[in-house]
Length: 103
Image 1 (cartoon, rainbow, N blue to C red):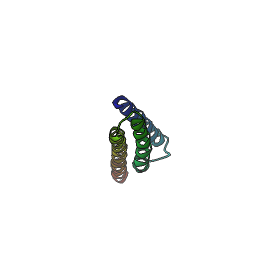
Image 2 (image 1 turned 180 degrees about the vertical axis):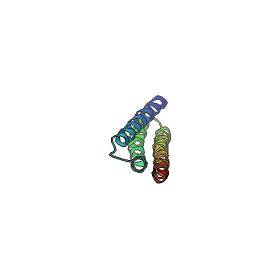
Image 3 (image 1 turned 60 degrees about the horizontal axis):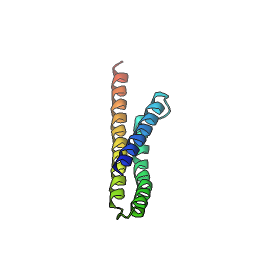
Image 4 (image 1 turned 120 degrees about the horizontal axis):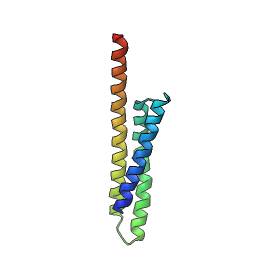
């Protein structure tokens, strides 16, 4: 179960980071808004994954605690990534305002 959790974290973070960076490079979505969207999607994805993991753990004869903890960890990692993008977006905006005013 641990390997599945780590692979899922790697896959989801790669997907979210690739999307945020590509949207920012194409001038379609600022990092701030990407972070807000990622922060909102994080708990939703964690609940869906948690339901799947708990069901898998129950069918294997477990209590479901491991699946729930794994899903919570995945959700926290995704939300943390979204918060990081919010701060990066604010930093980029402040730097662009400072450079725009001094030019």
